[in-house]
Length: 279
Picture 1 (cartoon, helix red, strand yellow):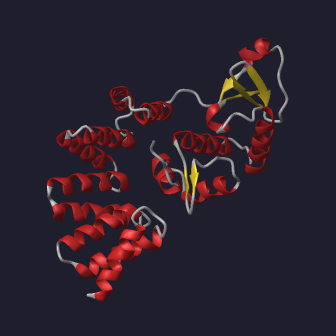
Picture 2: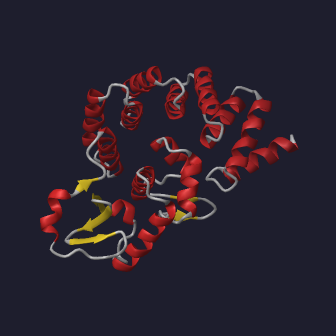
Picture 3: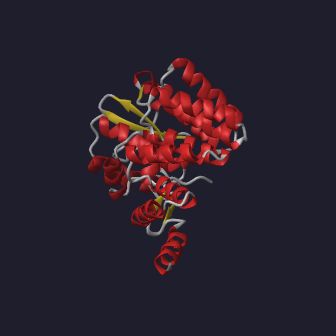
């Protein structure tokens, strides 16, 4: 199962990091795993997106928190309400439903709802963003062929939807088709040369091919666009170390450690820094 940090989600959803922090502090999204850093599964990512859209439609964080408290009382078995429930609008009222249960955000069950359905407005109609999330979900479940089909259809609808190109490149990369992956990363960068993920992923690919000098340039570009991109600092430090640029390697090891003091590579980096100090 893939887990996402807030920084991952910020890049994926194009939502400001500070906004995600605000949502997390309000405890509107349940972390899949919390150690020194909260991590979220795919349902958590969807919940962040839904909350941000509801917030943009005028629902305050306090109202959303109250809504969540009511939902927990009504449906305690629902793990991630803002991704598991269907959210619609009836007049000025927020309507939430799952299976045959329909209720308001204030916690009131609605009986005999059938006659109101014609007035119901779906808050999140099917858009390219919705298609993108469908593709992400197929990708998460391992249905890569279906995910590719949807990403490709997104590109036909919106030829500048950069994240679809990036994710298509990722799938081809995982399948071992580096040439096709590179093609999609380059297409993404033609649309948005400043896209951190596209720069980072292309750097990964170039590194795997052995083109270290070019890989370094694209890692640097990814970091320039997103200075807190910890994995890019880690990989850049490795490559600088490989080509003998010890001072630059040391700089990026230290930055990585400052960004991810409890990250998966933190102990490894500490060991390297100790060895470098003893040399």
